[in-house]
Image 1: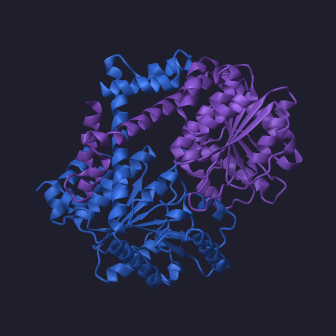
Image 2: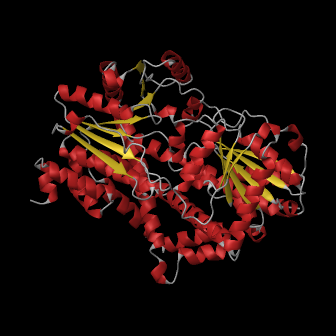
Image 3: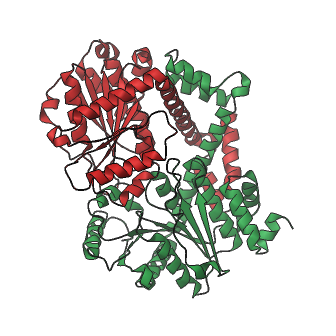
Length: 311
Length: 311
């Protein structure tokens, strides 16, 4: 059997192999997914994001356990941005629940950057599709809400859970800008700490600004390590899923996400095309040198490249 | 006189007008800059970034005053990301030093997002060029170090000053990932607060990881509101400038930045081209609908669009 057949037959090693190919942006991953594309679209994808230290991994593990008790199968993709400077990983050092690892109904995978963040976004989408084809009922994408790129990744989910914690203080300002608005469901984790009620009030106030939406994001307090509030949070996710399905928003949302991804795939291919012209007596490097020496301006140079692509 | 001639003659209203055109991504801005492109490349561009609340604006104002006392002319571009959700602005509410506003040798401009962040990056580059053409000796680009897009903007500067403050605690972890490594010079502002020495030690430790570089970023303590440490910080910026010039790194760095911008301009133009095909019996929307209904897979659809661009 080839990889495609093995995957459909439920061979877990085939899934692991496809995920590795996806992470490396190997064309073989795309080829397999292309052939099995009609099998995608069945899994429900939940994005989990929030600031470092909010306890996202533990929360995902508890949600996964809850869904397992209902007989659902789970995929977890932990997007793991590494810094070229520190060589470290934000999510890399956490310890996952041991019992989830031994449960064949849960598949956990970390995706690293291995280069540029655009590649990570593409790899994560491919990984979601691989798990979807494999037949997972729920797929969690877990990202640390630091950069725009991670936000772009988590936005592709059907429901986005924004995980906060008490005591963020003024930093909530920074999180607000461009990140808070993607939350469909809010969870205040570590809610036994001081300030949980204040954090809840602050989030509710921000949500008050946005009253025009049909869906008002629920805000609930959770203590993931004690399994406290997990039921309510899971219920909020299911309520959001119901809302999306009944309002027709799910299809609209998936269409928007597909549109973004499609344009981004094309932009990436165009970039490859540009950089691949060097054998034809033309290179980006020579154009750059001419711009730096003010022999040509950057805007005219961009137009030149475009005309080359078109011809 | 037209805008171009007025700008060259030193008409400050012409600069203001060009900056407005640039902010709106008006093609006229590009046309003017194209014609005067040979006059660019003389200003020294300093990026200032760091977490919200680090006191970046005050620091920039004090640095500008210091340079003014040496007879240099200054442009300040405060990149001001606004959130579609809160409608607020992170940098928008600060109060700039009144005496800088009345000094004709200093031109301050805030640039808002007005749509997508890619547009902001393009607008900021155009604004830098406008100020450069106008003859400013130093141009400061001030961004709040929150998202990847703001990082991308500040990275275009010749020297990047990373402004920190004491008491960031564990959040330094989040800042580390992908942001800290762009700092050429570190300033710990509000250094009269508790924990300044610890913050300095933490930064120095991170820099120890990166010893392979020829330039070791200096870390200095500053109290901008008291004008304390501004001389030392300015001196560090000038040392970095000297290092870049004497090592030949300045040209390499500017070339890298031009290369990124060039490719990004082309990608943007390609995107316009794709979205402009709808009149030709073809639209992105219809392709998206076919992908959502699994009539075609997303990867094949992306290839189809590429072939269309090429023909």
